[in-house]
Image (cartoon, rainbow, N blue to C red; front, side, top):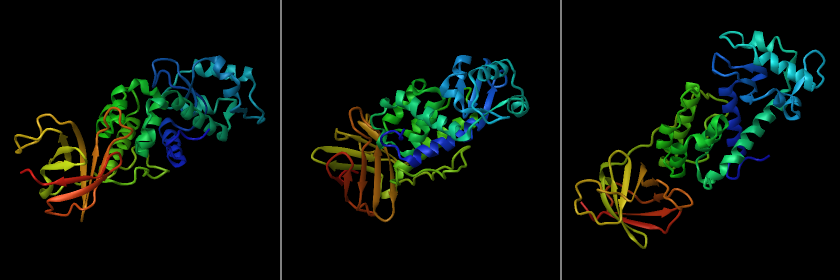
Amino acid sequence: MPPPLGMSATAFEYVVNFTIAHEGDTPFMYNNWPLKNPNKDVTVGVGHALFSENEAASPDVRRIFTVKATGRPASPEEMLQEYRRVNDLPRTQGNLFSAYRDASPLQMIREEMLSDLRNKLLGYWASRGQEFPNFAAIPAQAQAALMSWNYGLRLRGAPKMCNAIRAGDFVTAAAECRVPGWDGQKNEGHRVLLLNAAAIMASGADPNKLPPPNGPFKPPPGEPAPSVGPNWLNGWWKVWDGNTYYYFFAPDGVVQYTKTRPSNVSGPPIRADNIGRYTYTSPNQLVIMWNQVPGAEAACRETFYNAVPGCQQMNANSNLYSPLVATRKLS
């Protein structure tokens, strides 16, 4: 099964490695109860929960297991017996290997365990991914955070995070991604990936950029925060692309626009039509990443290519709309 449309094979394999790092690599049945879960919680491989003994003995799960002593495939009865043993065995701080792995007559085939993980990631995404029709336009690190998050809980549990990502607001998404009760390192990993997506889009870097494929994952390394604009840029600009807009650049890297000519030019608009982030790269590039608006196929990105210090006019291309001309008419 290939990665979702719009996701590279490299990005998908990053999610696989990220998941292994956070869920653990356990080629045997074990229980998280009561140490990490108040309910009995039989799990195999990389975070694959088994919800019943019948599921444990099913062909899809049984094919992953062999008998340690002989290497032959595990039988349904052997899978049932191991599930019942593990289901009734309390997890303590130090018995993961001694009570579960070492005492088990069964073991998982590693290649099949990894195949099971990939299939689960893709299967869960197939049931929820349609909520992101603009998935291909989302930076790779945010794609990775979404797929990892969905593996743990399904995206229906994070409407605020999902709405922010659909709007291209990865900073807000990072603030909304934490799940109470999840491992703190996993929550932090998702937060860093989403903040990295925000920094990448604001700086105009390659949206396919990923952290190192083999870690660290707890958390991944952070992207440098985009630099804010120079003093000459701050304030109001009149922008034309066939229609007229008024942009207000603040010193902190935030830009707002309004379609109404401001009556007071000493501060930002009273009510903005949209908000974005901008970054300036010397000697002449200014990139604006606007929050995605309802109905748009992606977040709007504008790249001004002649934004030299002290200029009174600058020109831009847009990924969605006509070329723009910005003029320093207001002060």
